[in-house]
Length: 227
Image (cartoon, rainbow, N blue to C red):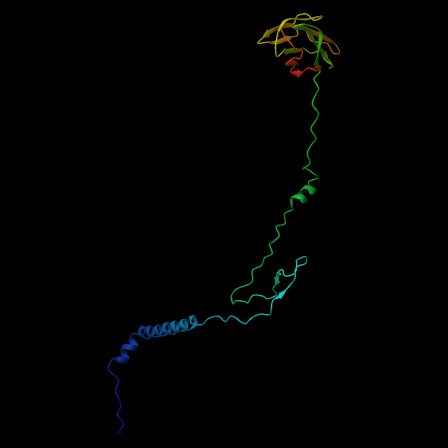
């Protein structure tokens, strides 16, 4: 026998490890978790390197037309330092491909041009006001109705004065018409249509007035001429 003393394994230890392999797996997982935590802690403690060295000097560009002594605008040629993980932002907007309003107007063949306003349609039956005779405080007047159209048409005259009163009215050469004075306004409607190219006078008498200019004179809602 030698002088070296051998240690005997504990009875049942190898048998327990062999029969329970999950113990070895658990120990390995714990060791890996500890190593991972240490690696993350060392990575967070590091800071990204930023170049803090000063750039080239800034050149000043004088602006034309300024008086002496006016501070000029500095034109900087220095580029900002690059930061790891960031990319420079582009200021160029993407093209949408849509035509502008002027291009659309040219493509549309001038669709935005204004159309000329058509001239007003002249009525076929018109009236012309006139004064046949005057005296102190009254006068005798007429409205000549003319059909300048190509077809026979009826007509209606409305006549009023700012002062005085219409005491009588009649139509020579046209029978069957009717008229009345209401609130100082004479309304006369023809009984028969007026033939094309023909005319007929509506005569009336006004008393207690100092003017011969009517306040209202229309034929078929169109203003009379002659005053």
